[in-house]
Structure formats: C-alpha cells, structure tokens
Image (cartoon, rainbow, N blue to C red; front, top):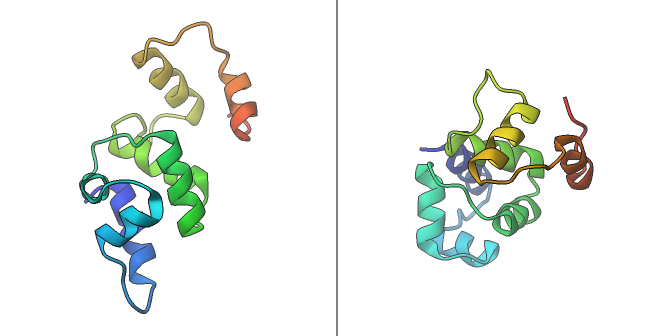
Length: 111
C-alpha cells in the first residue's frame, strides 16, 4: 500500500461506516480506479485531486502532497521539500522558476 493509500485507509477506518473506494471516488471527484491506484501508490495525482482529498478528509494539504510525492518517488527522507520541488520541476521540464516563489504561492515556507 502506498503512503497516500495509508492516509486514505486511516481516514476511512475512522468512520462508523467505512466508505468504499467508489464512495471515496465520488467524494473526491475522481474515478473508482483512480482511488485504487492511489491506494497502491506510484502515481502522482493531479493537484485538484490532492486539494479535494485534503478538503474532504480534513488532512492537511501538506500531508496529502507529501504522501503523493513519496508514492511517486519524488520525496524520500533524504530530500528537503525545496530539493523535491526543484526535482519535480526539472522532471516536468519547467525551468527558470524560483522555488521560493512557488512556496510562497502555495502557502509554504521554504526550507
């Protein structure tokens, strides 16, 4: 199970009637198969989906994003969030972007 999957499982297990993947998918605005992929890890969800997960589950966006980045291989214990951001930007072919500016825009303080 992936890191995001663990977050979702812990959240779902905290309910009296545990929501199914299909029910979670409806809450998050994605397909049931997408939730299944998140449970297994290895995929990087779209930012809108991550925001929906954070909003619905009331898990901090930073925790949801961190779990997704770990699953996709962009974050490990040896990397700081700034290093991770720069690595993700490079992998997506985005250059000339100031990491500190992006951190400000998403409401995080850089390392």
